[in-house]
Structure formats: structure tokens, C-alpha cells
Length: 457
Ligand code: ADP
Ligand code: MG
Image: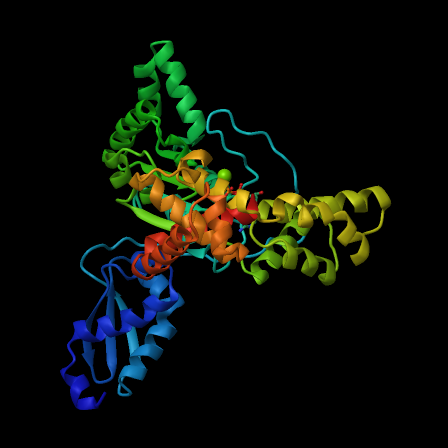
């Protein structure tokens, strides 16, 4: 592009060109979160000003994407020498992010402390012992911001991601952080299943009004694993009222789920839209470096240490579930305690054989079909049936696609596996999903989550 043309490029066109490139490297959730409501407000004498909706986003853009944005701008127009960020008219909340680093040796005593009866919080979950990496930094920053300014920054805050990736840790850390900073604030942490059973009990004992008013007295309500509300209409209704009551009073609501709101089956539309009305952040699988950092932090907590070689072996072999990473470490700690010396690599391999090569780790057609069925709230039988219902056809096609992609199954095998269907059906399904993936980010996200289940559970 010549400079002449670029001079004519409006702020909006220029920003669109940048966004088109930025988008390539970001998950849809990340992209929407950080780049929604941003714009170029001026370009003069080689200086471009980008406006962000609030200081949190501004800081994040500056620190995290600033360099990249500059590079893209500069590649579009060599004249651009500087990029500045400012807060737009929309919001002016002040928020300073403090870096969360590894705990220092001896600082943390590993112990299972009592869970607080009032809040249901376990003090062992904190931001200090939560390791931040590319897979979870968005979720961590958003949760931290919400804990620092309850009800002010993002409401509701919705965190989603696969099993054992740190959702509960973050949610509880938020609760603990609020209590640390605002001792007078009432925090309540509830797994959605517990919320459900409390609603049921309250209805039975005719105490629902009582229950409601109790829920509505809190300043911060944390509901973990909201996918369990799927299909529970009465509970959803109660939660909807609680949600609205708290929301209207600017009370912070933090939610977690194993999938984004739009992928939760049998969730009342009005709840879904509430969940989508705030900030949505995903947690992915940690990369190798983050896994190592987590292992090292857990070693410190346990006042122990293992060689780089051993930690490297664990991190290389357990990739998709942090709970399992910890489990592996606990194995080695137990061995060390019993023997008074740490295991060498060979012993480590033997000790962890069950964890790393457990039969459940071997992906099978059955496992994929089960995971897909579970994800879409269907029975395995339904997936394998010949039903033409839309809500069954799509999951069936996805299961067929995964069999092909993950197991390299032949199309005739796939057809047979799905209740004796023809191989052309399998080919058609596979093609359908491939095409759909090109068009829809949501499907890609759902597939990632399903795969996490297949590989981690
Ligand atoms: P989830 O709720 O997503 O299934 P959890 O929050 O229960 O996962 O995390 C599983 C285990 O891994 C917990 O013991 C938690 O402390 C630990 N964990 C997860 N993410 C991190 C992290 N980033 N840093 C340190 N520990 C982590
Ligand atoms: Mg959890």
C-alpha cells in the first residue's frame, strides 16, 4: 500500500486492518474482551492514539498487545513511530494490576486449613499461589480485578475452562481476596450443585423466602460449575431472582463453568443472556513453562524439591490437567518421605506409570462418544441412534469428526460404530463439521472443550 493511500485511510479503516491481524492469534473470548469498544481516535505526525473503554483494558492492551499493535501499524504505515493508549469516554475505573509471582521459599506452609462455614471458602486458594501463564492470565486478571473492586469492574464475571485447570482455585481466591481487603463484606462461595440442593431443601421445608433473602444479603456471590444448573428449571428460576437482586445492588457475581454460557444446554435464555452480559474469560491448558512453574510452586508449598529432569518428565507427560500434575507430585513426595531420598528418573517413571499410562488415558472411540454425549447432555444411545433431531444430529456429526481426527478411524469403521451407518454418512458428517469449523468460532471452542474432557478425564 502506498503512503498516499494510507493518508486517506480513515482511523476506522486503519483500526479494522489492525484488528483483522490481531484476531488471527487470539481466542474469540480474548479478542472480544480486549478489543470490543476500542478505536483509533487520532493519527497525527506518526503518533496513533488508541482508545480503550476503561483503565483495566487500557493497561492490558498497552502491556500485553502494545508491541504487537505497534508492529502491525508500522507494517501498514512506516510513518507510524508511536502508539499511545488512552481511556475513552465510556468508563474511568481505576485499576492497578499487581504482578503475581512465585511465592518465596518458606513463605507458604502447605496445609489443609478449615473451610470457613459462613463463606465456604478454603483459605488455601489464593492469588499468591496461583501461577499465571498465557493459558490463564486473562481469567486471572479479570478475577483479580473483580476481587479488588467488587461489583465495579466486571459483573457478572464468567470463567470457563476444562476440568482441573484452576477455575475453583481462581473463584475461591477471589473470595479470599475480597475478605482480606474488605473485612465487612459478605462473601458466599457455592458449588452450583450445593445451590441446587439448598433450593430443593428450602422448597421442601417451605423456607424458600428465607433462603432467598439470605442469598440476597451477600456482597459477593460465587457460583462454581454453573453447568450443573442445566435442566434444573426451578433452581434456575431461583438463581435468576437472586442474580437480579444482587446485580441491581451492584453486588459482585462470579460464575464458573466447563463451557461458555452459549454452550450450556437447557439453560433458560434469560439466564444465559445475564451470564453473557458481563465479562467472559476462558482458561486453557497450561503450556510447558507454566506447568513447570506450577510444579515448582507446589514443591515450595510442600517444602521439597526435585531435579529439573524429574519435573521436566512430569510436565512433559501430564499436559491437560493441573490436578493430575499435583497428583503426580504428591506421589513423589510420598515416596521421598517414606524413603528419605528422592526418586531418580527411573523410579519416577515407575511411580507415575499408572497416572501417565492409565487405561483411561488411552483415547478410544467409546470415550470420545461418551464425552460428546455428556457435553451435549445426551445419552450415548441417542448419539448412536438414527434420530434426525437437530440437537442430536450435530453432536453425532461432531463425534464422527473426532473419531476421524483423533483416532484416524476409517469412514466405514465410523459408520459401523454409529449403529451400522453407511460410510458415506460418516464422510458427509466429517465434511460438515470441517466446513462449519471454518465458519464458526463457537464450534471450534466447543471442540476444544470436548477434547479437553476426552484427554483429561
Ligand atoms: P477446576 O475447578 O478448573 O476443575 P481447580 O481449581 O480445582 O480446577 O484446580 C485443580 C488443582 O490445580 C487445584 O489444586 C489448584 O490449586 C491447582 N491449580 C490450578 N491452576 C493452578 C495455577 N495456575 N497455579 C497453581 N495451582 C493451580
Ligand atoms: Mg472446580
